[in-house]
Length: 225
Image 1 (cartoon, rainbow, N blue to C red):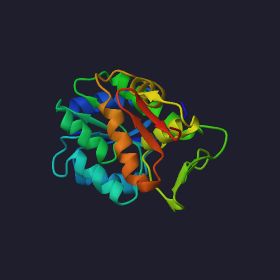
Image 2: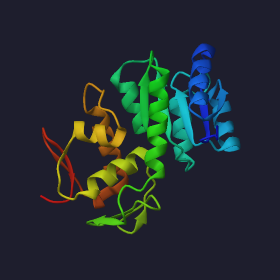
Image 3: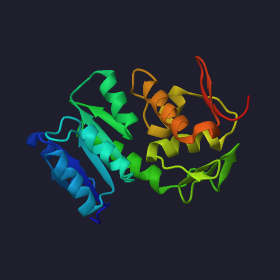
Image 4: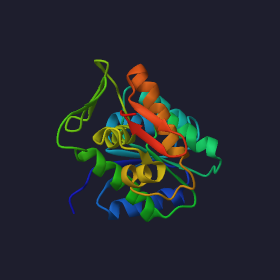
C-alpha cells in the first residue's frame, strides 16, 4: 500500500500510542511516535509530517504549548488534539491556539483516522472553482491563500475551510450544525462552541476586513445584510 504521508503522534501513554499507530498504519499512513513535547517539536522540523495527533497532556511542554510554538513559528501542519480533560475550556483553548480538531479520551481509533483523513482531504481539494472575494477579503482555493485588505493572512486548515464555506455563498446564513457537518464532516459536538471559537479566530486574524456576520440564534454569513 502506498503511504498517504507521515502522521506524527505525540502521546506518552504507550498503549494509546500503539493503538493510534496500528489504525493509522492500516489506513495507509506512515506513523512516527514521540512521547514528550520537546521531541515532538524536533520531529516536526525533521520529518515534516502531513498531520499531527497531539495529546494535550504530554510531559515537559504539553500539547497546547507545542501547538502554540508551531503556529508562532509559521508551521500550519493540521493538528488534531487528543485530551483526557473533558472541560470545555481546555478544548476551546486548544482550538484558539491553532488546533484544527479534537477528540476526548476514550475515543474510537477509527474516529481518529476519520478525522485525520477529513483534514487532509479538505486541504487537498479546492473549495470552489476559482478565487472569491467578499469585501476586502480575497480567497484563492487553489493556492489556499487569503488576503485581507491586501495583506496575507495565515490560517489553519480548518479556519481556511470555514472561511471558504462562508465566502462560497455570500449572504447565505449557515447554522452551526450546517457548518459542523460541511466543514468538519461531523456534527457530534453537543454545542456549537467549536464553530464560535473558529469564527472568533478568523475575525481576529482578518481584522476590520472580516466579512463574517453573526445572526444571533441562527448562525453565520459572509457579507450581505
